[in-house]
Length: 101
Image (cartoon, rainbow, N blue to C red):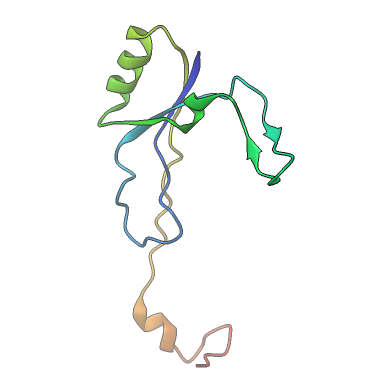
């Protein structure tokens, strides 16, 4: 089975970086998705897609994949761009956009 190892990005609903320090291992899709004729839901016979394993380090996830004989791909996280912002810049008199409430 093919697995994907990656470090998840933070969700839009959180301001901090919680749950982004661990590494996740997900199984790739092996069975095609099907449309349920009665309800219209999309489903698949492959239940391994529902499994997501969490590891503290990248090496632990790779070791797990190798130990269980899974072919794996590792997606390295993109470097985080921190844009420095000052609160006082919101009230500068020479702003490019007008400040309104």
